[in-house]
Length: 193
Image 1 (cartoon, rainbow, N blue to C red):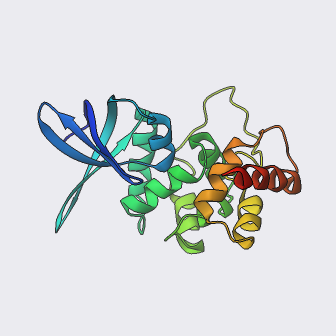
Image 2 (cartoon, rainbow, N blue to C red):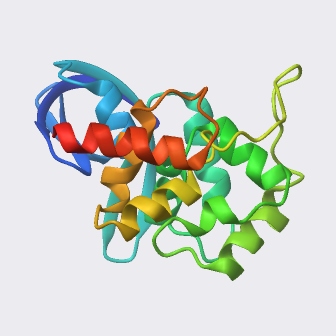
């Protein structure tokens, strides 16, 4: 099992990186948030999960061990594949997704392509008692933490893609709680691009 790789980035696309490790190129699927955080670094290290299928093998990469372990927990849920699990990690911060599961809020999970209401509810039922939030961590779910569901819907309704909306909302000040103001600020950012 390949669980960790460090090497030079040869190719970076919007869904994966090809990592040169001692002359061998590994294609590793990563979340858009991880790609953004990696930036233009030439050498990176990733924790990996090797997903075996009948028709091939795929590597999924994570910036830290906690994300990898949560990804593997998501894979244990019936009906959740690696693309869906990676999508869950892309919609909001790991702590926000955990809080949503603990509080039984499927709205966050439904935003992921390929995860419907039944699968979201199954994730909550299966994982509610398997995950924990760090002691002392605030258990309140803030709108800006859970992917700005209403704000994303509003921006998509205005013609932007969900990923454009998510990226713009990540740049909006998290202290702004009102959906309307978050949308207004995101529109300003989108207008500059």
